Length: 453
Image 1 (cartoon, helix red, strand yellow):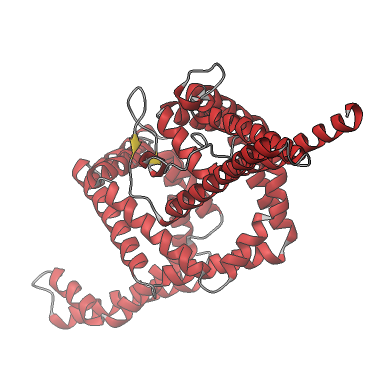
Image 2 (cartoon, rainbow, N blue to C red):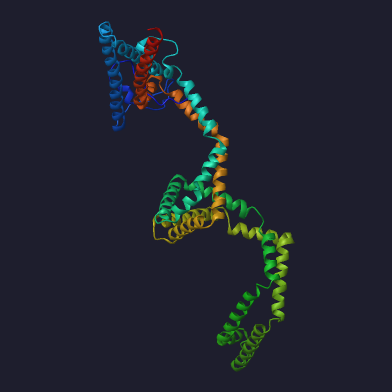
């Protein structure tokens, strides 16, 4: 049972101890630690209210005691004062009994170690364990948590917040802070080592020949390389068309010195025209023999890359030359540096394309959560399943926080803190006991008078 009340220290008006306005916090020693703090406005108000209620309860007891004395002394002369005396007597009994009950919760009444008193200080650990078990059983139930989440409809509320002005901005701001924090925590050398390891594992360790050959085979089979062949033939035709002098000069330079110059010119023109005619023929005929030879060569190359050990070995040599250790490390360094600088620059600039698109995506997702019941239902189901798993797996650990925390608290300080927090309400027990005792005493005396005279 959770006690939300304060006790008095007896029928006096003494101030609550200074420790009663200290903040109780978990400690690290055997008995725990209590970290004192200056009383805040809330604690000061509670202390004043507690003193006021104690004074009221004590005043009622004193008033009844004075009434009892006068009524007892004058009842022979004024018989009706017997009823007053009986009411005052019952009220004092009720007030003292309830004072004892309330005080016994927090300390030994009048310092006397009466059995079953000072309940909270003596049984603090048991109370903490019971409270933790109560919370675990009644609040950390998987069904209770899932039912509560279902009634709240978190997906719709989250969607309304995300789609509202400022929601996406807040998410982008917090996301940017997370990214900056992650980059500060991450060590560049470690990240580069991870990237280098991934490159070696997934790019360098597997042989290049067979996968490149399979990819090339599909490309050549579907004819995607024809566009590249057409481009090369077109460029060759354009070059020949624009370089008549170059061709004739090459012929002239390689002819014997005794051949007349005009013969060199005729031969050069003939060679040039034949080359141009040949290139134009290849350019105009998609089924030209040269094109077929290129197709055959490329298909043979694709097969050799997959099945010829010598060609596979040559591909591996090329890979080793292109991507040696220095090149891989440089690639990892450049990759990480580029990603890091790009992301940091984007998240720091509210007008960057990344930030704008991220905000738009967040707002769009929020609108979909509001407008699409099916999506909202899936999100709510995911949240409920996740919460259920957490509760099912860690409910004992969560409840154990309560038990362990209470166990570390100092018993006396804990009692004083609880008394400060709820003592005002407990003083009503004393006041009610005084009133009820007075009425009970009057009723009992009246019934006895009626029956026995």
